[in-house]
Amino acid sequence: MFTRQGHSPNVSFPRILGIEAVGTVVNAPGSSFKQDQVVATAMGGLGRDIDGGYADFTCVPAKHVQAIATSVPWETLGALPEMLQTAWGSLFIALQLKSGETLLIRGGTTSVGLAAAAIAHNRGIRVLSTSRRADRADLLRSSGADEVSLLQHAAANFCILPHISSLIAVGMGLPAMLHALGQPCLLGCSSNVADVQQAAAEPKAAKQAGGIAEEVQKAGGADKVLELIGVTTLKDSLRCAKRQGIVCMTGIVGNKWSFDNFSPMEAIPTAVCLTVYSGGPQEFMSTPLDELVQDIVAGRMHIPIGKVFKIDEIAEAHRCMDSNSAGGKIVVLT
Image: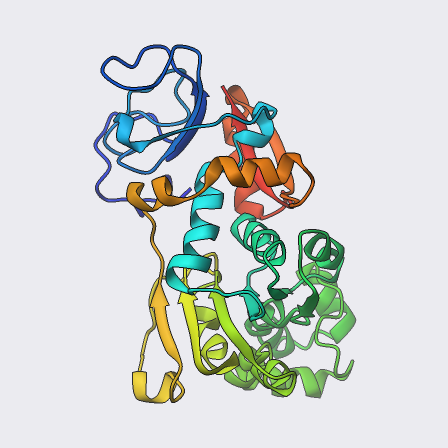
């Protein structure tokens, strides 16, 4: 998706995209891989310097390939390499997560968030996951979240406030405004237009209403925080961590890549560590992929597969990804 949106400047064209792939070996001279052996690969220039997972065939360095001994359907295996590498690396390389700790996942319904919850829960970690949608709570719990924090549509409220303000200016009443915007009554505090107008005039306060730091700290705080939304919630996530806690920014599903203004002394609480995770081929190869596949097959870990598409449905797959409607990892079969 990022490459399609122009956020991968180092791609050499023409190129078949896809930064991960699973399949069978056709030929691997000089390596230990055998013909028809099931393998997985990710990163290492795949989809950028060499043709990627959308291709029928690709040729990658043997040192970037893992053998998969456990039998599993393609639609399941195809969901795993990059997702599990990112979740595992974020948890155990960046966050140095340990059994008995509390993990907060911001962006819990992303595929990486769901995988991280499953992996952590399976290793004795208490998991708190967040979502803006109440109808995703059961999905989060079934994937390993012990507790779910709902953000009360705060981000959606903030997005529609400027539009509400402009409709107020032309004298439209509240029910008509919400109907015009295709929205239910998201604000929750009042049906009075004056209250809405005040909220529209104070967008900063409305935006900050989605913070959960106070709630998390009242419950004891989080030892580790996995930030998958990005800079739009990162400052609040930093305030969720205990002293000596670690916050790792791995995702940017909030579609904002950097702060407009950032003061570390103001944003980072005392004794809280901030790091990032951006895994490459070395991190992929250190991920115990076949062991995690065994946990899935044995039912010890649940990884939800969102939707499965054929390669000729790739445009629809990207529309599904853009709308965040899959409810798990999207898989494309070639």
